[in-house]
Amino acid sequence: MTTDATFKFDPEKIMRMAVDLAKKALYLTEPNPVVGAILVDEHGQVLSTGYHKKAGAPHAEVVTLDQYSEVPSSSILFVTLEPCSHTGKTPPCVDLILKKKVKTVVIGTKDPNPRVSGRGIRRLRSHGVKVVENICQTECWEMNRVFNKHIVERIPFVTVKSAATLDGRIAMPSGESQWITGEKARAYGHRLRSQHQAMAVGRTTLVNDNPQLTDRISQNARQPQRVVFSTLGKVSDDSFFMQQTGSKRFIIAGNGINPKVVRELNQKGVTVLVADTGRPGIQWALKTLYTFDICSVLLEGGSELIGSFVQEKMIDQLYLFLSGKLIGRNAAPSWCGETGLECLSDSPLFTFDHIEKLGEDLLLICHPRKNNYS
Ligand SMILES: NC(=O)c1ccc[n+]([C@@H]2O[C@H](COP(=O)([O-])OP(=O)(O)OC[C@H]3O[C@@H](n4cnc5c(N)ncnc54)[C@H](OP(=O)(O)O)[C@@H]3O)[C@@H](O)[C@H]2O)c1
Image 1 (cartoon, protein in one colour):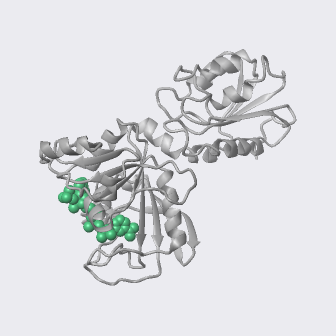
Image 2 (cartoon, helix red, strand yellow; image 1 turned 135 degrees about the horizontal axis):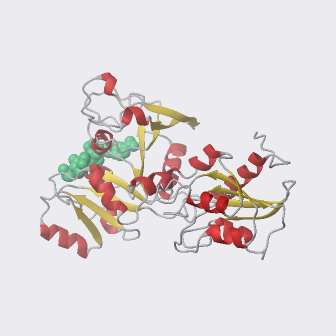
Image 3 (cartoon, helix red, strand yellow; image 1 turned 90 degrees about the vertical axis):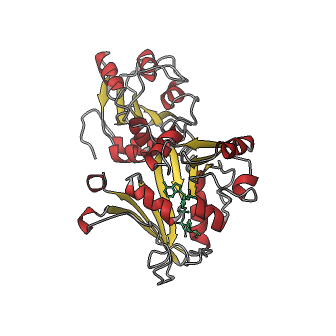
């Protein structure tokens, strides 16, 4: 707990409430971050609250301060992210805070965008507002991992999801893969789909499994846009991918694709992104998808495609569902395919963030350690 003399109450408790508010809009605000705000009196009693509901909607500070022409003089504004000082789809929140005569602002984390980071704080301070920074910084940062990545690197956040046996296999040598894990794990996997703006698979997975690439578990799920990596754009007209026209579809192809195939796919509503190499590079594909406002991608495999993502160090997070089944066949693909690794010391190292039992299966959530991975 902070011992800052500004507070006669526990500021972390209030900031955690603001985090919970922000999370109500998790996955709904892209490309914006989730943000929560709370105005309290000097004793920590809540006066008003707000959160950012979706891109283009009022910011959390605007909702929270809306009812006041001027806030009560000793009130304190808590906000999970540094207030903006630039005009986007809405006017700068810093101006509003000054106009409403807020005297103390408590901030969870700075805006990660290098072009704006710290500016809002400096402007507030230059107008005599007291700013307390970094209250519950980790929680405030973690809930915006997708935003923190894409706003700085201008590339989508990538989550890999794979269901593997105890020996790390995702299918039989024949390609048979249904089902490796049980119902609970599969339902969890479905929900991950609608938590990402797009999901991607390799052409072989499309051929072998004919996946629908939709979340059929969550109510009112926002369905992800669908991406297939296929060098020559070879996808069957009978596949769900071609038949279901709901969410936007992309094919990532190489420069050897026949222009006639591109035209035909375009006529069927599929956007074809053609690399200037024979096989599309992963970084190129992700950067190109970002130009279509895709900020997060769930990669569901298979083995070869995940191997390419590992090789190009393009993974931010891994959800590995492990079943107790054992395949024990060398010809069965492993979840991360061929990485091209030469020695153990070069091996990407993942940190375990969360381990959970789902029915008979295990879920491991991990992220690559940056110093080793990049
Ligand atoms: N258990 C699970 O969670 C799970 C999930 C998904 C899949 N699977 C299983 O995995 C198997 C398929 O895996 P797979 O390794 O054979 O194939 P895959 O990774 O699904 O697809 C690989 C294909 O993607 C295309 N591709 C285009 N650009 C690429 C790039 N830069 N890097 C890699 N691939 C690229 C290539 O096809 P072209 O040369 O035609 O372009 C390549 O042959 C299936 O049997 C499926 O059932 C299991």
